[in-house]
Each structure stands twice: as C-alpha cells, then as structure tokens.
Length: 387
Image (cartoon, helix red, strand yellow):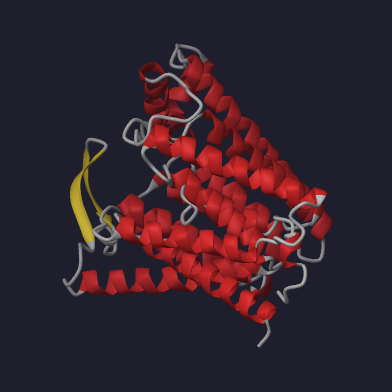
C-alpha cells in the first residue's frame, strides 16, 4: 500500500466517523437524552477537521485554484469562529467543517451515500423507539395534554414530542423519495403515500401534514411523468421559485408587522396564523418586535419563534440566513439545469417545513446542507482519488 492509498484510506475513515457522529447526535433531545452530546459533537468536528488536513493538496498550495480554495476555507473558519464567539454555539462551524470535508472527500456519489446512511439509520432508530415505547420500555407512545390550548391525544411513538416525531418522519419520507422515487410504479405511488401518511395523522402536526401533502403531490407527478422529464422539471422549478418568493415576502411582511387588519389581506393572514401555522405567524412578528437583527446572532433564542428562518435569523444571525436563502436559490437553479427533480422536491418540502420548525442550522437535520454536498465541485486535492 503506497502513501496515496494510505492517505485515501485515512480520509475515508475520518470522514465517515464524522458523519456517524453527526447522525448520532441528531436524535439528542428528540428521542434520546443529550448527556454525551458535547463529546460526540466535538469528536465529529475533529474527524471532519482531520479529513480536511489529511486530504488538502499541499503540493499545489501556491497554484491559483488552491489559493482561492484555501482563502474560502479560511473565510468560512473565521466566520464560524466569530459565530461561536457571538452565539456560544458551534452550529455554524459544524456546517462549514462538514461541507469542506465533503468537498475534500471528493466523491460525486457522496450525497447518495450520506443520505442512505441517514435513511436506514433513522428508520432503525424510529422503529426501535416506536417498538420500545409500545412495550412501555422507552418514552411514551402517545401524549394527552393541551396543545395550543386544546386538550387532545397525539402520538409521538417514543419521541419526546409529536412535532419532534413529525420532523424526523418528514425527513425520512423525503430521503425515501430521493432514493427510491425512480423505482416506484406510478399506479402504486398514491397508495404508498396515503398509507404512509397514517403516522403523521396520528401525530396531528398540521405543518408536517402540509409538507407531506406537498411532497406526495410532487412525487406522484414525477412518477406518472417520468418520460416527460422536461415538463416535470419546469413544473417543479416553477413551484420552487413561487414558494421561495412567497417565503421571502412572508419574512418581509412579518418584519413590517401590522398584518391583522380588517381587510381581505388581514383576514387571510389571521386564517393562515390560526388554522394553518398554529400561531407561528404571530410568534414571527413578536420576534421582530423583541430582537434587533445582527450579523452573527444571539445564540439560542429558538423559544421566540418556531419558524426556522426567523429563529435562524436571531439565533445564528443575518449572514447565515442570507447564505441559506442563497443556497436554496443556487441549488434550485443547478437542479433545474441538471433535471434533478427529486432533489428539487426535497428542497421544496424542506423550505416549506422550515416555516414550522427550527432545524435550519443543523447539518444532520436540514437536508439543504446534505443536498449541497452533491453540488460541491470535486476538490483538486482529490482529483487523483478513486471516488
């Protein structure tokens, strides 16, 4: 085994250990306790850093492309450290390290491999949590309490909260669409999506059901029109851009406030807040009233708003929100050009669900960052590596 083989083997080991660490802590606070979370997070960051240090092309460090690449890496590191100082949280730095390590790893099929690990791992954990809770050995199978001032029974299948279960179930369903939509018979897809909606109906998460319905409609359209890829890609891209514009406008409107007046527009927003978003629109407005926007955020202010964009704006800062919105738009355009319809379906539903849940700055929960792996250029430092 020569030096190149040893180097590639170390890159492989370090990278996948980092991914396993991210997968492990993704359940902390949702279905498992967070007692060892800091240790696992630090280990994951360390493995990603070792991937970068081992895989970087030091021989060509003074070439123009390598210098530009190095400058971007340093900029990301400085930004991540400034966020850590402001927020006392390494979330932004974790995203940066994971994405840089993915680029250094240099595998064009990496996104599929990472999503497969997360899909099968999540399926196993969720099945075990449901089984153990049904047997009375772990957590609760269902919860009866006041939700939004209304007493009701909601099923959480071993998770600490029904919305936490819904978050992971939506993530699991989106990963399934990305991995298996090509293999589903068109006539069978509606049946599958209807049957698989049952756990969400029992969890009674309105925004999760809305995101699931959107995913099902787009995925069924894709399975029925596989032979007309251009038509499906145009429709999917149109949905993506329309949703994107509506999402940005909603942020602007909530920033301005004064939505609930006695006009058709005001009555629409009252209906949206009360019946669809279960109070989240009001919490978004209150967040803008309570906090001032800054570049690097305030840290953990997730209790202020459950909206992922607003929470990310105040917790992680304006810069990360701009990066996230720019990444969505960039990936939509790239996916449209590549006719990556499944990728667009995933991002459309992630964007929609971010209106309801605060998971934006997590590499291991937000599929936006995992999708970004597939559109990172192969690093020159690994052009010789067999992917």
